[in-house]
Structures are given as structure tokens and as C-alpha cells.
Length: 231
Image (cartoon, rainbow, N blue to C red; front, side, top):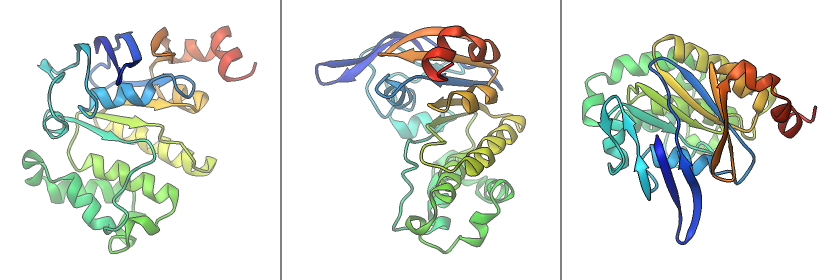
């Protein structure tokens, strides 16, 4: 992302934001509520308009592409709040994730990979997604995104509303997804979990990037520790 500005109506939410994710890298964006983190993810995914600047992935300009075309380029999103299709079964939610034309020929292979990561989804396959627990819905939302075969996986607040033990499972799984070759960008309020997951991190406040550093250095940064860890 290069010099991104965006907002809602006449209210600007992002100011000249630039960031990068390298091939096979895990990057975390931390920041308080209202910092513009979800807006940033939605701009990347083509779900919210970019006022100015460029979103480029693997040499392709995504700035003006519709969401399904962004998916076709290899970028998939796990939205805040999971947003599974509650009146549809777990199996149907996963099928939708692999609906894009380029993903259909790999549907069975990717479904097997998702089930290996989240065996509970096989047990729940005929169950309505809305009846799942919050943790199971998060697993389903990640699995649905993986069905598209992304090169870059975007996750917006994956720990939101989940018990610590489930958060640990989710973040361990993100490591496995990364180890399999997928780059990962995580937007996260859980500062310690988010930065321990990543190799690099950014601090976003009031729509602006305030800091960029190795994740381990951000965890030791006095300003970050004071603002986010109460230390």
C-alpha cells in the first residue's frame, strides 16, 4: 500500500498510509479502536474505495478492482466479526470460499487442507454456521478464506470475543498456514499475541502509521508498552 487515503462520506479515516508485506511474511498491525485498521483491510480487499494512493500485489494494481477480482489475484480476507453465513451449513460456507473460477478446480484438495487444520469443521459440516460457537465460527471464516487458495491472507481482529485458549489455537494455526507458504497480514488489538505471531509490525493511530519495526522490537518499545500494555 502506497500513500493510501480513504474515509466515509466527508470524514477521512486514513492519511497517507504506506505499508508492505513480503512474500511468505507475517505482519501485524496494532492500534486502538477507531484507528482505521478495519478500513485499511477493507481497502486492501477491494471492499472500500481508496481515495488516493495505490494497492499493488505481486505486480498487479488492485486499487480499483472489485472484491471478487482481488480474490482472483490471490488475496483473501477473514473479516472482523467472522461474518459467516449463519443460515447456511458449514459445508456450504466452505464451498462459497472456493467459488471463484480459478479456485474450483482445487476445491477438493483445499477442503482436505482446511479439514486437516480444523477437524471440527468436518464434524460440523451439515450444521448451520450460525449455531457454531464463536471459536468454531472463526475457524470456519479462516477455512472459507483458505478455500480461495490465497497467496496473502488478511485477518481483521481474529481474536475478537474469543476465549484465550481458543485464541491460542487460532494463532497456532496461523503459524501453520504461514509455514505452508501463505503470507499473512493480521490486524489485532491483542498486542502481545499479534506481535509474537509476526516478524514485523506497524502501529496505526488516528489513521496514520506512527511506527514500523521488527515485531520483537515493537514489543519492547517503551511507547508501545505504555500505550498498549500498561507498563
